[in-house]
Image (cartoon, rainbow, N blue to C red; front, side, top):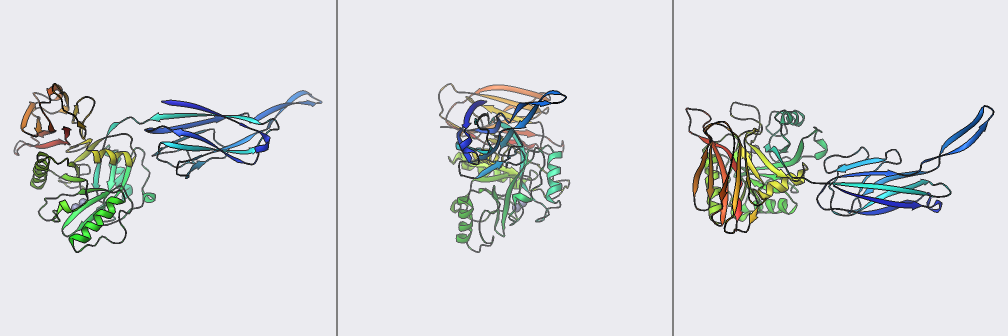
Length: 435
Ligand SMILES: [Zn+2]
Ligand SMILES: [Zn+2]
């Protein structure tokens, strides 16, 4: 944590003015705490028939406020608060949650009443840095706004009951408004839309309105234009369930601007296994393609549940921007449900999604947590697919492996969920690349 203190003397001549005090927001700040103090009251002797008293009176009133580098008012609170907190996801009343972008911010000091001798104001700024942590959520969810069964308020409660940190709302061809999102403590709701067409579905994540006009497109060219516009506007674009028999993606992927492929949609089934196989072929061909997953939740059924599968991301904070940044970078893995099952990989302080320069003697440290007896950890690299570990009992296991050459590494956990069915993936990671 970084702390700085600023001082400002306000002479009486500045009474009635709004003064601006600049400060630098450090990069990677998760939370700003501002405290300010000045002499607000003074006492003067008061002689009364009953004896000597002192009278306390207000001699200075200094208001406070905050302005972001883009000139936007983040908040103002008069003189009623001496402590203010702002982060991207929450803030003291009177202030809006705001991205703490690095650069020159300004404190507003409102010199409302200033004593004849002037006043010294001391401002203490505390910058808490972002600390990456694993968050779990669901990036593909429908509500009553399209063909889901739950209104957003119920869905958000449902998400918290499942222990999720985030959900993305992806109704078919429906723009959303952040202002309509319910506030649920600990849950980040990410705006999105499932662009839905007879020839393919695609999630546009992170924006209320990824493109102007309507979703309709009757040619490859019109589809390209929608994708290009959404991408340029900053949407994270996911090709959904690409190899599903009825709802697969039948436009030429290479002609479109997109970021991710949804290789695991809802319950594990042949179309997902095919998506995983085709994704792996892209990786083998040298393409740094990042994958993602989503439950495509509509309602609770025997086969479909919220966050089955669930996306785990190593995000700098729980803001939607930081979550999507981690999703885009592939700092993620997918598990069959929000569970304690984890696979953690560390190579020189880096994990999934990273690109490292390969060198002789490189070691990877691998942890499998909350494995069930018989769970198999599979390592898929540029050259081989190997079952590297079979859990002899329920528990946590770790090992260290040499990274034998350049290429990618990704991991899967295979589990026999039902004795009468073959084993299936219970967890899939994004790759780490060695160059
Ligand atoms: Zn779909
Ligand atoms: Zn869907």
